[in-house]
Length: 335
Image 1 (spheres, rainbow, N blue to C red):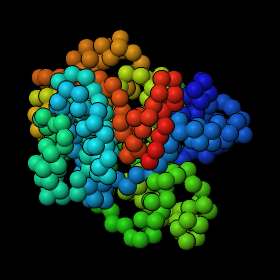
Image 2: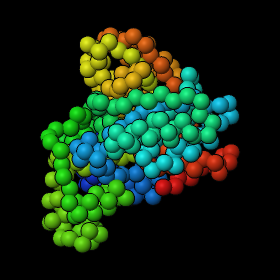
Image 3: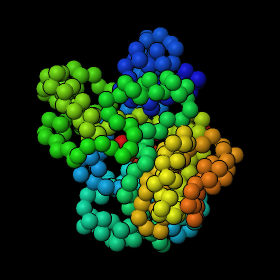
């Protein structure tokens, strides 16, 4: 990506459904150029814009972080098999005390029981499993915005959103009907569909689908997200952090990390670690600074484990088909 591409990606991260006119104003280019660049970036797979039904707001699912230790030589195979699970949203091969980390969605306690006590231990090559249930989200990928734009421009783009980008979400649980489901499914495939396009796919009028979509946006039931590989915007060092913090300081520590521009997500969890998340940085030096300052300066910190990602097998529900990658070849995405 060149500098203009990166600024356009920054605009899409700030407001995934920003119009081409809004993007052109934010990145100081013509609307025609912004439209052409956005189309190319999406067509090339450099960025995806998707709608996501929030499991918490709709009471459909909850999240679980898992860390796996595998037999030598089996880590990649175990990660690929885990990534094939439909309830698995992301999987990474990492360095450190574990070999693989993943985020899994579960729908009930019985589902969670099956995942943790049966399915994960039965994965070929897995020697040990640690699981951490998410109990409060401080930041999710919906709010991730690396320093690609000025704070003023980023704030302006965010103010134009209909959906909440901060966590926790406001309001009560939301119930959806069949039309809501069709709208959400269409936006999950292409989050930048216009109202007429969306209406055609959902067999309803543009006025109706817009009203329904904006109602879901406002409640937090449907949230928009631009999915970008951090490496493509100059952040090649991706790491999973799992921390132990004094419970009396847990909220403050989570809020501090949520405000850091390197944080993709951070949540309070149950289990052996009570604060888990993901960060993306520009270099090992930046990671050292993050560990020593951002993590080291957290109130109540008792233990910190940082596992650097070696390979992202799945991100935002999309498998990265790395098995066919040859030296010098581009990574092919398949969904």
